[in-house]
Figure 1 (cartoon, rainbow, N blue to C red):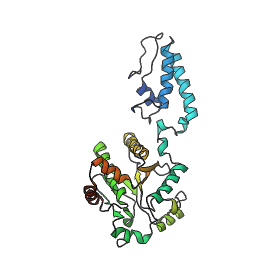
Figure 2: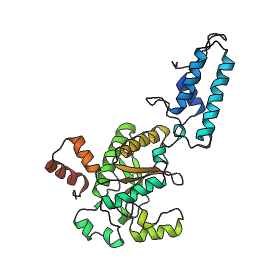
Figure 3: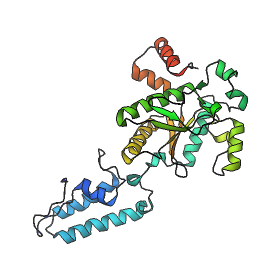
Figure 4: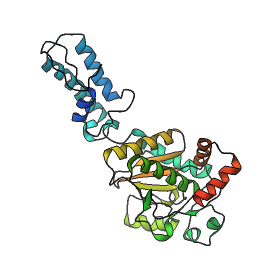
Length: 287
């Protein structure tokens, strides 16, 4: 139904607006190339259908489309920047349900809180390979604004970062910027003293070693949308819980322990070979 550009052969002929050009003009941040109609596209398609079944001029056609879009924009709060077409998907918006799920996963994944002593090099977690050191700079990502002793995480979070950053680099020839990994209980208490938005240590996946923050401050719209799509897909597969933060330009992610099983299935490896691969990639072990 949609053309790729505006057509106006005659003022008495049906006037159909090119979908992509029209959407880009109204909503520059919208993902107008995605497959399947969005709610926004349904509004335009509905108006186009009515226009095609009648003979009205260009001005009235645009008026009908404009009325439909204005109604939709009001009801879905597009004008305030909260719509999926103009920014973060609803799955990344953050909610009490998302927080509740993260807290449930603390117990399911057997994640105890980490303290200063647990992040030290001679701790049980480090010796038992339940926590691993993350390289601070690679060809695909780099760690910034993270205290030297805190570039530590669960092995499956390290695996997630390596795979995601490799895919991102292959797509954009650019590196991911990591701004937070594990924090100790004491770190989180100190953070709350200077940042009122920081959550309680008991609620933070960073304090459980399963959290990672990836900055989108320098990403362009294509890079940011790519990240959104990946995170939403993995969230729907119950492999992580993600939030696109607004106060700080980061994707906050809690990776679930079953992520490594997902990777094993993708690679088609048996348990023995995957355990070798896992330790070689992360320095940790499956537990």
